[in-house]
Every structure is written in C-alpha cells, then in structure tokens.
Length: 279
Image (cartoon, rainbow, N blue to C red):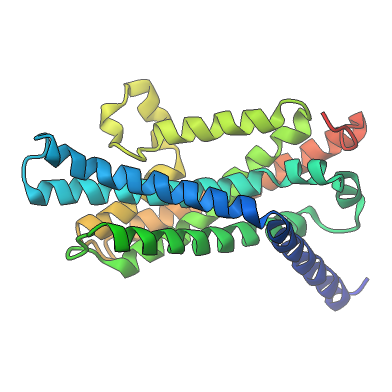
C-alpha cells in the first residue's frame, strides 16, 4: 500500500474508533448524566468544605478561606478531568471485552497507535467538555476569586498535561490484557495510588518521605502545581515554561514506552488466547 493510501486508511480508522466511542456514550447517556451529577456534587462538596472551615472557626481570615477554597477546587476539578481521561483511556480494553469486539479489533489491519489515539482523543475532548460544564456550575454556586489568576498560563499547563495523562492511560490499559479477570480492578488501584501521592488536596510535604518519592515522579503532581501557581499566584506562561517542558518530556516518554509495552502485552495475549476470554 502506498504512503498516501496508508495514511488515508489510518485516518479513516482513527475516525472510526473516535466515532465508536461517541456512539457508546450515546447508548449509555443516562449513566453519563448520573456520573456528571456525581462529579458536580463531589466538586461542590470540596468547595463548601473550605467555607465550612470558616463557619466552624477554623479559618483565619476571609482571604485565607478563599485561597484554601480555590486550592481545593482546583484539585477537585483537575482530578475530575485527569481521572476521566485516565479512566477512559485505560478502560479501552475493558470496553472492548465487555462489548464483545475485542478479538475483532485486535485482529483488524490497523496500527495499534491509531486505535489508541482515537480512544485517547475522544477521552480528552469529552473530559474537557464535561469539566467545562462542571466549572460553570461551580462558578454559579460558589464565589471564586480569580483576581490573581493567569488563565492563559493555566490553560497552557493543562494542554501540556494531556500527553502524560494519555501515556499513563496506555500503561494501565495493559492490565486487562495481562489479566482478564482482575485487570480492571487493578486499574482502580493505580488510580487510587495516583490520588494519594499527587497532591490533589494537599501539598506533598504533608506525606511521608517514601510517598513523596512517588509524588515527585507523578506528572499529575506537576500539573496541579503549575495550574495552582497560575491561578493562585498569577504566574505567567514564561514562569511556568519549566513545568510545561517537563510535562511534555514526561508525556513523550510515557506515550512511547507505553506503546512498546502495550504491543508486547498484545502479543502475549494473542499467544495465550486471552483476547476471547470474558473473565
């Protein structure tokens, strides 16, 4: 097949995988509404937690309470976005097995990069749309002080974070290939560990030294720190270039090594006949 024809083939396949995710969400749209409401309730609960500290006398000043509130809201909103992207990318294989299309997908003459790119791009787009809707609800329900915020810098850090998020998702997508019975549950365990060590609701300094080591290598840590610096301390894009560069570098490593590991896991699954098993 010539290069232009091959490119058209892969582009069509990419669009097909993207559209398949769209149709899956249309089919189960009621569940998506339920999870959206759950996410809104979770984020609002975190926001009102800071207000509650002042109400019970734990807050020092109104300025301090607003700062804590924004700190926690950033963590809750970003974790909602990052966990959604991570979850949807990593559960690409679980979806295939559940829908009964896994064997057909993995035997199709399509590059695995095209397959995973289609799923990942949909996850990123869907995550951004849902997170934006949650932000609108939060802003309407809670007064958020953004007088010291640089929204452009925050957006730049968020854009850079999508690459390592995709890489982490690809790595965890390997788990259902390795273990049809327990791979999905193992993915939840990895997500819980990332929540613990990435400083979502607290600075890493409050963690034991051993946990801080894992936090220092988590790309989610630098995403949260960069966006908080942009929104709380008015740091601009130039100030955050080291963080943005680090996220892009971590993402490149995670995506490339994740694809290599995924291909190895796929070959093992085919050799051992794990694609057809339902667990």
